[in-house]
Length: 95
Image (cartoon, rainbow, N blue to C red; front, side):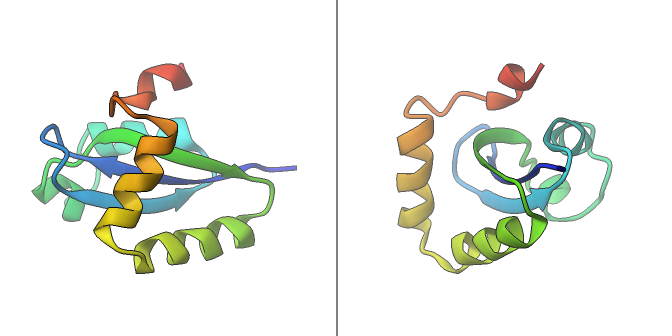
């Protein structure tokens, strides 16, 4: 069974949010940190992992990603605060 993840990244000032989905969380966050893709996260320097959820089915993860993206900024802040109230970079916990 392959795991899938939804995740929320922010910048060092915790002002910009990016929500994504992946089947390899550690590798995907490394891509963000190394500026592998020249898109939104590159432009706004968004590479701090502050929230994630794990799913057994990619379809569930994609549905959850869409739900989070459709939510308000405050909804994202509330989600992050439930898992990570000090907004530390959770990437280090993936090692």
